[in-house]
Length: 437
Image 1: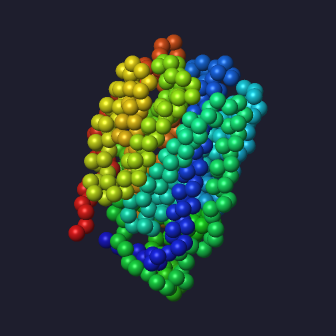
Image 2 (image 1 turned 30 degrees about the vertical axis):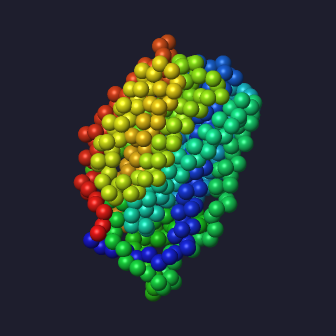
Image 3 (image 1 turned 90 degrees about the vertical axis):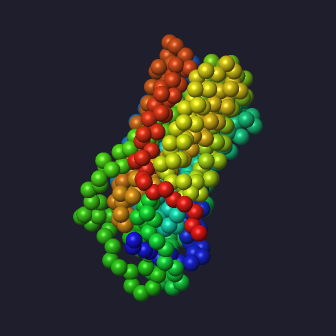
């Protein structure tokens, strides 16, 4: 299998990863902070679950638009520009959502936040997909673990008393993406041709062959294929070069794509409606409704931090199959829960079962990119659209099903669909890795 080279002990490569982790952290912090505010938003604006589902619908559709915008921006200016733009767009979006005190401001803020959400989702995964290739080992599970860590911090902040403050306090969440957009990223020239100390590493057999964008502290958009560490860099097609985004065999990634969609259906249902489920169905004190999200995110984080090793040890298909069965048990506990502690345990099992699905899906999608950065960005941006189909079904349809009945019925849809992950697991590849001697 063809190889590639990277500088030994590259400080810049470590900076690349820190920058990507910061972006994921900011995304997770803001998203979970916003979802934990849903019970308060519903009360302040006098909305029922069906009405609020329409607001979520607007946000999800806007996120799909944001992901498409990120694809266009990445092809012209680099995925880093798309990522930074999304992080900065969160600032006015959160102000509109939390400060205006008017339903029109809430709607406008959620739409703008949706656009930012899509741009950051696509941009951060474009960067992480290629960083995994540069490391020549699985890093997407732990990279997306930073998203989960951000969500856990947000949950801790909510449990610390923020949930009892006036709604306008939520605008302060904007500080995190603002810092992520500027503070951690330094320098543009990363893995340059002038580097002289190299080591060969094998091409990643299941990861993407791509390169990162122009974000300061991240790989330059001009990088293609193997890193050249001495002499003259080989000519590389630019993002606009005809043929640089060759036809992608989308059918090959369909199983992982459907699994990705199902993950986001369950994930959105758990995070958007979990706190309200505890509040309305199980009569949980308002200060404790974050206990729907907290165990789910803790379990996600545990799986994602261990995911790099587990993937290398057992292979992605085994992780997905086993996780599907665990998640089914968890969702059954949620649907049948007589009290909030049982539901919280169910959300923990659900997160434990599904935590690795999204990063492994992006790794599978990255295989289609070859060594072409522009092609990789297109694949990731379009694959990311499935995120919002799942979010639409999970956050919007769950609420609509619950209208006139109960959120218990709404959670029955994820309960049934998660079983489809068992046969879909084969689409994550045949490689069953074992420890190296």
